[in-house]
Figure: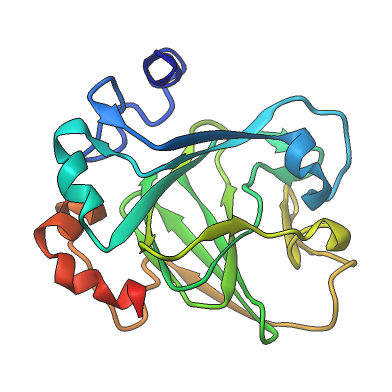
Length: 232
């Protein structure tokens, strides 16, 4: 199976995604590979890289949880960004925007979650590592940046069942407002206007709290009512 091959042979997220271990007992509704050709215009340096830059899985769950999970008022996704350099820049995802709040749990690795408001000049940079939680506010798009030389930066995400997580088209602006390079963050000279930059480290939760011991996957099944705010 493609699923087993990806995770057992290439070792993406194996033994790191707690409580899910990716194997033939786990299902997902959609799998996507994003290559440099797909998102290269969001990078600082242009090149003819053929690499797969990151992976995305939708509606991931154990087969025996599937019926229960389908009845919940949330849906989930997994994003995994393998470590790499593309020119001067660290590996990253494309920019994603949801029509509602999104919760992220870091499953593996370390990196930055870059969040930018679509309605104001606010830009938040959150430095995270395994076990940290980040709540993406409504009307903010986000980018995942892997800051490791070796290892994947993987996250598990939750959003409302009727919400959509879409790839944001920022190619005309050469991507988000900031690039993370070997020399640190660099401003995107194609971005419009000034911005208000704030730096954070660790959990970025607003007024929410989550159970780190069991993780989002289990907590949403144990206490589904706690996550109703994702559908407001």
